[in-house]
Length: 297
Image 1: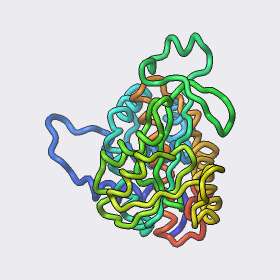
Image 2: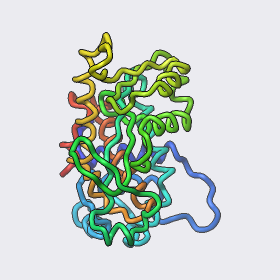
Image 3: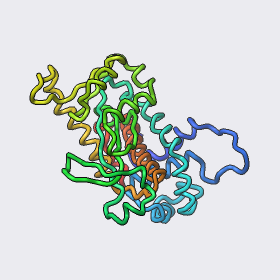
Image 4: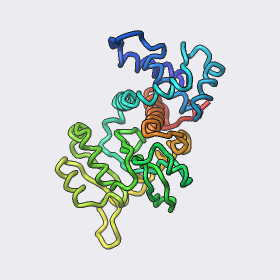
């Protein structure tokens, strides 16, 4: 099997179509099926076209015959915003279909999702009440928006994720995310989670210990170092490379969402694109699991 965009999109469409089947619907069926919608959304992100209007002009010229029907920009935007549960379902379906899903090491971190910069924009934004000011210690700057909390394997395969107020404690968000899907931990006794100093908490330690999960994180200077401290730095670097893939290649920070539904859909769209590339690379035996080079042109 080749690693090119057309092969990826065809394989993805068949996989999703087989998984979703043909559920009964009331009324006239949509001209763009759910499988086609997801495939169209993944192709948009992999090709780096951020504007939905420009994307719908791009497809007929550069991907002729790939899709039987293309909606107008308003219709495509509406379908994407209402398809967030479907996007999450497909992310999980593809992740479970790889050998990486059984990895007994997870890496967890959060990264800023900036939604506005100017004060007038912040005051008028439809995200008011959802987004707030937060501080990014990695770049030593404040931002207005949300935080993406991502749990993934060392190879970058997303396990679960959430968007949250940047003022919320990372440790509380992690526990809430794991409580939302308790089967994730129940299926992995002896799991190791690698995190940074922001996840230091006696409450979190008790929470994970009750679920037979170990947490590895850097030690403060006034505390004894962890026996596996030497393993932490190279593993921690992996989450930075995953964030770089999302931001540098999939334009995570340039999502363009103006409402909570819009931001969520665009973030899910990018996580799905990365998951899809990992899934296809593993299926075709590629040496670099998270490489997107074969699909970005």
